[in-house]
Figure 1 (cartoon, helix red, strand yellow):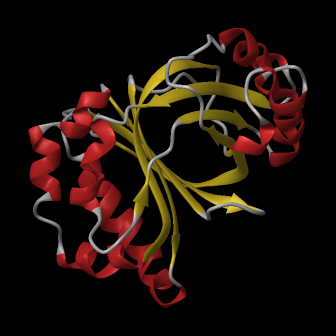
Figure 2 (cartoon, rainbow, N blue to C red; figure 1 turned 120 degrees about the vertical axis):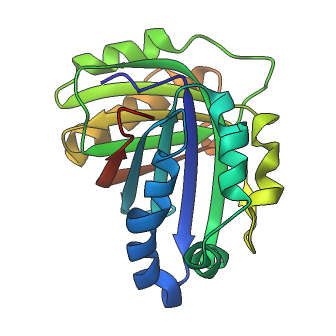
Amino acid sequence: MPLIGAGINAIWNDIAPEMRDEFFEWHPREHMQERMGIPGFRRGRRYIAVGEGVEFLTLYETETPETLVSKAYFDRLSEPTEWSLKVLPFFRNNMRGICRVRFSEGYADGGNLLALRYAADPEDTPDLSPLLSPLLSLPGVVGSHEFLCDPVLSSGNTSLQRGRMIGLPDRIILVEGSSIAALEPVLETLVNGGGLATFIDPQDMQSAFYTLEYQVLASTEN
């Protein structure tokens, strides 16, 4: 399906082994529930890597990117729970970006995901819809999305660190599918099939496959 809203908070992280069990309880039971209570938040999804890559990818879909710098959001950040203060310092390889949705098409929500991020000249933002839209005709591909992360809106990372080092992604492509096997040829098509490689060095791209662990939807009153 198309994404729910015009904003995305994309978060990658590993977790230190000694906090792993606690993380698995805290994240869905408390942390994501809190986020879904903030006005403008629409859906949260967490994925776990299949194969290589940063292990966890969390996506928060919001009404607008500005939802992620709203007073309601920062009020929540300024009062972390004791459980959050315990877990967050154990995040590793943490990357977070507030992004604007540039393209989003789909006919279903897929349980599997290809995530590709890359850096590019900020003055060069080609229209990728001719490359991304046809992916939906491939067997098992149900959604295709592109984000451009906003470095100004994301600059609040320093207030979120809580003992972590947080990097900033640049551009992100997500492709949803019914299986990892359905998504493997998509990576080849995007990188080497005359698509992204025409204007981006494949060495500058990072890709990984993920499977959905769970999702949380905001209440209809939010």
